[in-house]
Length: 161
Ligand SMILES: CC(C)(COP(=O)(O)OP(=O)(O)OC[C@H]1O[C@@H](n2cnc3c(N)ncnc32)[C@H](O)[C@@H]1OP(=O)(O)O)[C@@H](O)C(=O)NCCC(=O)NCCS
Image (tube, rainbow, N blue to C red; front, side, top):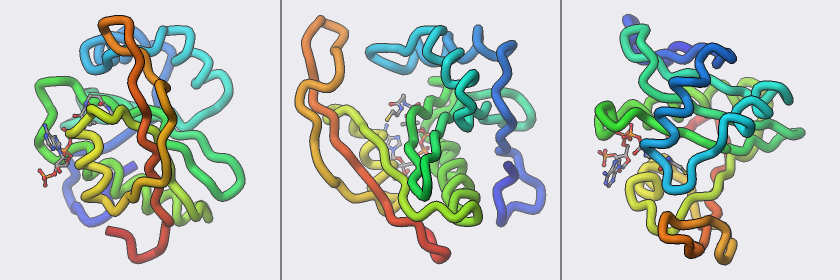
């Protein structure tokens, strides 16, 4: 993927490969409270989910995983390496991704996010996602407890944010 409005894009994506999984796991472990195992990432590749590395100047700085069923897309995971956060990279990737999903005929993009994950919730809100529900005690926390998930979704229209 190349971001549509950028003539010389520094942020791109490419398909994730099995060879990327060491890096993906490292980024995931650093970025998530209850990181996915290598097996989960392997399964995502094997079932054909849209798994991509996020590249900055051709170097991987994160990843994004989306599944599509009928006309609905589920953002399953997105993580940026810690040193590359807060620079608009996830925002740019998600704007480009939404455009691709529209072109594929998708009408809804949805996701779950930890209630305490302010950066991610803010990112999605700024992109026009609304809260559509909650899943109680959906996530494990680092201290062995549980935390609610916020369900967020966005109707995809040609004139996206
Ligand atoms: C969530 C995450 C993917 C965002 O990636 P990012 O590239 O840093 O985000 P961006 O720089 O594109 O930020 C876009 C918007 O998100 C919000 N945001 C990003 N970081 C934020 C922070 N630390 N605090 C508050 N809002 C934040 C802001 O609204 C920002 O837009 P603005 O700067 O114009 O206000 C990244 O923080 C990350 O990898 N976190 C750990 C893993 C994770 O939580 N993934 C999401 C799982 S649902």
